[in-house]
Length: 351
Ligand SMILES: [Zn+2]
Ligand SMILES: [Zn+2]
View (cartoon, rainbow, N blue to C red):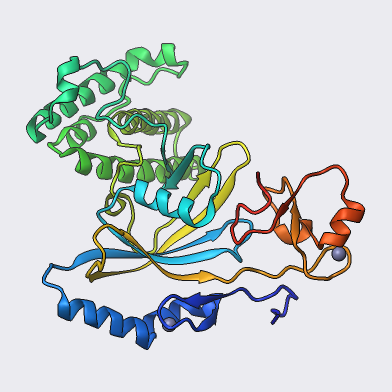
């Protein structure tokens, strides 16, 4: 096996089109220029009558064991569920555990109620949930919700929240801005931008406080604080955090995100959207297409250096390479802890 200057073996994989064996760090470049792949794409485009679809090219890898990786293309309008299914198909044998994605600071998980406005204190009549809510209806409810949340965080609630009183924590301009007519998606985008701005400005107030009086500093700080409370409460209430959200509504090119399978003995996966294109999906039932995958890794036994066959159960946040043994050494040295066969997955070693 080839090794890097650090002594760690180089991870290689096969291109799904030409079957060539390519080093992990060269695979993206290869996929861009692979003749076989380009020919396949050209053939699909010639034959097909259907219109092109937006596709994301995503790289997934084990967070602690990046020698396990997948390049794939997925239809951008698909929900996160499709990605969840694909990662489980490729890497996870046991399917008893919960999973979820974290994208841009927001968690999207399987156990989140997949409905509009899951805020407990906002009650809608049962029949409203069952029928399709119109866009206008949604906007009206969103405005009502904004009013409700803003009124919760007025100056009067300062003592209740344990915050020093600030007579005018919210500027009229800001309230107008937040209440401008938005669709739910636009409002979510706006709120996320506001969240980023408020975090940044809070840091600036803390840092550049030499030139202003303590009263002004306090007043600025608490204005930002109130705005942040409102932004977060609104996001919590209106943002769909189920895996029913479409990839294109939460991802863009360059976006890094993560996936966790099992919140107990967790397997952590890092993902990144590395390219996108308009293309033909050859099989409509298959929304994800594998482009390349790492080859099964050959680890040396940590005791004798012979090819390892088994892995000690229970590593989660370090390299699998430190817990692998050949059959002989495993029989001789490892008595108590359970052993599992080494699988080609970042979940290897976890029962
Ligand atoms: Zn190729
Ligand atoms: Zn050994």
